[in-house]
Picture (cartoon, rainbow, N blue to C red):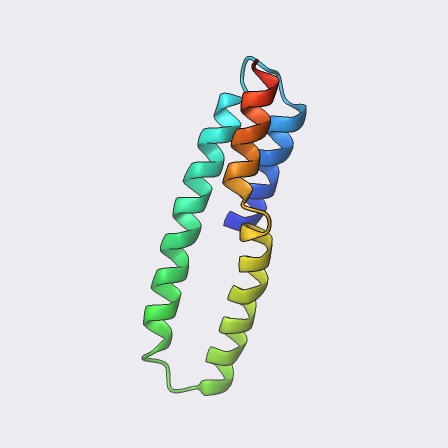
Length: 87
């Protein structure tokens, strides 16, 4: 969900009302913080789960989400768009 929010924040920065696009930048920063917090919790809790197949599946889902959230750096890209559109 957080990775999707990062994508939506970029789209809002690219297409949104220039008077409101700072909200897209703030939203991207909050989504990244939520993402990092969720990943930390999942990885820490996964250490206590005995079902290795389940843990491997969760790690795979985290890897997929990480590709979406971090390539390219979604927050930096959103911030760059905001700055470019407000100059």
